[in-house]
Length: 379
Figure (cartoon, rainbow, N blue to C red):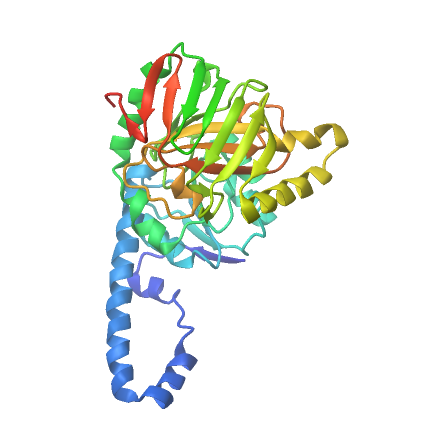
């Protein structure tokens, strides 16, 4: 684990960079010649300059718009070896706002929800702002929950890549997304029956407690005890346990996979009772089955709970096989299977995987919200 204190001088920041390609450059010299190396090197410099500018622009937006970092605030940036460029860009943007900034490069976790090293968790509790671009999610860790309880505002970016950080959903106007999500609120009020259909064959109905809609995933995380994903942009809720019935066809993405073959889930009384869809369906049955084996016998079937339902609300988000962005794409909706405890449910099972529908039609009671992936409301 590496810890970097804030530095105001640009020269000192540059010392943090390393060039792992020196040996490769020597090989290039001997194989393709100096002239080709010079040309290739110039293209690389131009490309790196462009990427650095894009990273800097996105980092500035996160610091100033999403997190609204103020002078003198304690800020912790947590990255891992896969997200070092993003961590460095955020560090350089943040030290322009506050001198009390730490950048930590921790070892890459093995899976979503793995607790960070104890020194990192302890540091999180001492901050006013935590930004965590990491390969695997820290969102549902005890460390983040404790930091939020202690007053930090936290933005996690599980699975973020340089491309995702600089394009697509991260390039959205988050103030506009906040307004768009807020405008949905009146349509949710006093409506408790949700029906989702699609041309692919989805036809599913369930109940919700309309007061429980979550409308804060808008990218603006500027008050104590707030927690968001970036890129942001969804409105979501826990289906009332035991009420969902029908057929669900996932045709967009599942977890981190862009689907070539649809997944068919048969739902009875809020539980998945059958999964079809070739090899990926077999993989799903195996993955959830292995998790179930680790639970007490009376809890095993809870791994198949339909845990979450939501609308994508980010007009710049792309469907690319990374659920962090896929489920935010405007006009889509998603269902998550597994653990619903974070939303107040009883399924504490340690797995939570979403699948995205690309062009759903959705009704709240008798009022239609989406038609084939297009909002028909004035939002």
